[in-house]
Length: 157
Ligand SMILES: [Zn+2]
Image 1 (tube, rainbow, N blue to C red):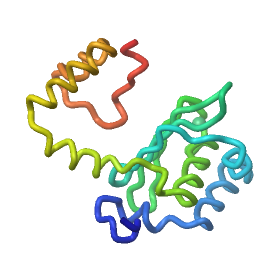
Image 2 (image 1 turned 45 degrees about the horizontal axis):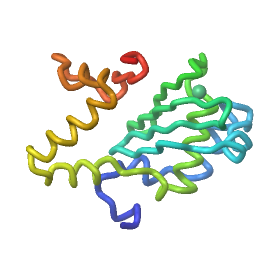
Image 3 (image 1 turned 60 degrees about the horizontal axis):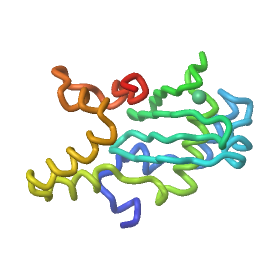
């Protein structure tokens, strides 16, 4: 489905353009983010409504970035723990989004498909996941509902 027809993706993300990202880049990273993006790989790229996440970098060094857009406001968190409001890696992920939105897994589509799976089959899948990743049991059994950016898989390992 072409991005402009996809109602699951927030209009803020659909409307982002190169000039905006380049302006962020100039403002926050002296224009270095474009070069970083061109020399990096993006893995685990996900789009979910008004949020993007992904791992960006290379074999030796990479960062997990999360970005959320509300109107013109952009917030981000990144494992680089930069003091900047928006870090180099977040801007690089935004370049990735405007260049290759198709490479981002649309979580809304995946969830829509998962919703159609029978519960017994889902339980088989969960069993498989937990046998391999037992620390994730805590996610399923958490009493408090976690926000999208509060789930830190690494802290469970
Ligand atoms: Zn960063």
